[in-house]
Image 1: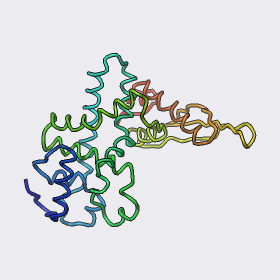
Image 2: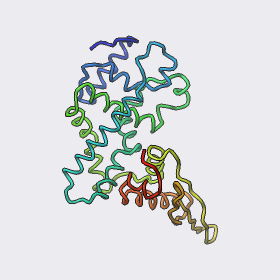
Image 3: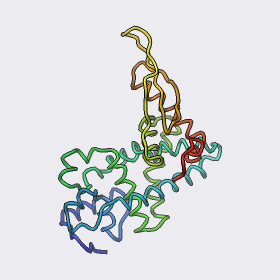
Image 4: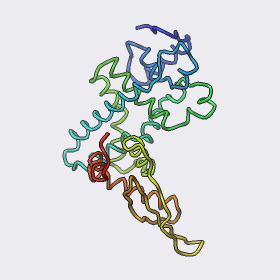
Length: 255
């Protein structure tokens, strides 16, 4: 299907055609792919733009979560619910998705406004992860669930293997912050509970608080290390309690 508004340049069409080969996914409506790779800052500066990728990101996030959850459920029959939730959280994290996006060149294909371009938008993990999810959402609308599932698993199955083999990046502060922002609309707070030892061998103790509940203190040789440990306590506690169900334990209304 041709673009209905904002006819792209020949160069842009060639870029999208090459990217589809990288994806091993051919879009019938290339306008959907173009929209998935359009940041809202670009729309603000281009009156002819068809729209930004935020709605597609919303859709893609939901489809991604369902596909990965179903895959883990069917392939890891020996794992408990808490283990499945923990694996899924790493696989669909911002860190993982942004890495995939950068690896297949999405960072160079996103259409930005001049301001976001100057501020380093192409290197922002949140923007890259959102664009990856938007591509998944566009693939679902263009080809249906089965084709979108195949596309998602092509990129995410190797990430599942990394987690199972303990080869994945464990940035608990980022994971906890993503959860808090997306589900609770707030941020975790870290506080120094104490420190001990001489300057050359100091140990820090940090607590992590979220919505009035505190975890820790956790220890580390640097403040960052102690914060990571405290974040791990909080995140693992929430996941063990069942993720969304944990919000009820914290007295938080479900979204």
